[in-house]
Length: 378
Ligand code: CP3
Image (cartoon, rainbow, N blue to C red; front, side, top):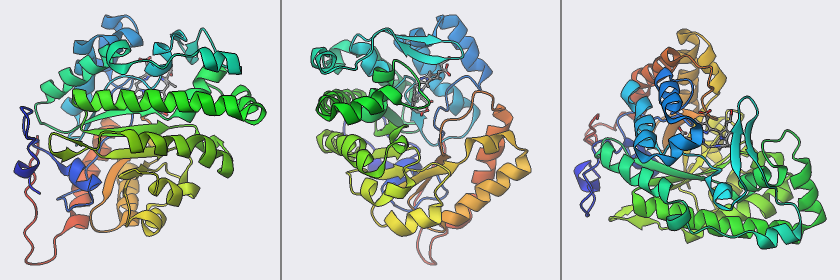
């Protein structure tokens, strides 16, 4: 499949850089594609300027032109192979009327929490196209503005991860309310997760219809569960979502990436839950992950974001170590093992991407006589 053959059948412009989609399909590429979780954000001075202009983070998300501008900021600085919609996972609970707000230094908060069976019962499942129309407008604006430069990733939180924020009323260290609810009233927890799974499926499908070419489900807090609780309360609902997603749009597959932070021990189960790719944090070796599930799914990861606080020589060495750990051949998407820190120096991100560009082609040499697929930079 060349760039030309992935051109969409609709009015959408052809894709000029399809490395990311090819790697997701485990097809040969010229070098390892790369993007970063939270690539648009506070570590960029130009982001901080736009956020100040918008007034607040949610105002930035709600204005499609500003959301589009900040989505493109990291692409203008670094030669990344994918764009990710600028938004947040908490837009769904916000659309469920829980009253999302942000307190500087404390992270997201909700005015209302959901803890009792009655509160779960009363919760309405939003209609994504109506209640989250600002997200869909941002997706189509970004897709138009990208004009085929790189693919656009849409995203959502996993039901379990969203539930942790809704039940706790914000971020949590110990998850005491949500875990008490899980063990005391598992039926109510299942009802909550089922409502969220329906909401997420509708939300991601609306993003796909609006122009998202790949979707990622962020299960940031799945790794806080015991193994049986993870299977029953997190993975099962991600699997339900994957089975309800639009998997082909404009004649092209829409790949799904599942990222469970600290989920390395459950890779085999995640790899059979309907994802095209599995995201890994830095605690799992890629060589080990590839051996276990590389025949089924592509793998995304897994540089420790804190490596970006080190000097360029150390960054390059870690990039090299991770490439070597995955080894030769397709199916690897380079990423961080979690979001980039707001305290990261953008120059160190440049050092990271430059090292990858320098070192990764050696892992994609075609066997003699085979003509490498044509790749284009944006
Ligand atoms: O990756 C990208 O560039 C796309 C944008 C994106 C944001 N949040 C922007 C954001 C994505 C994919 C998210 C996902 C998200 N949001 C997750 C899952 C991924 C992960 O990092 O684990 C979670 C748990 C959230 C919830 C959330 N939203 C938190 C914990 C915070 C930080 C709050 C704080 O004050 O530190 C947010 C706000 C947020 N989301 C910011 C950005 C750029 C910072 C807002 C600001 O102050 O400008």
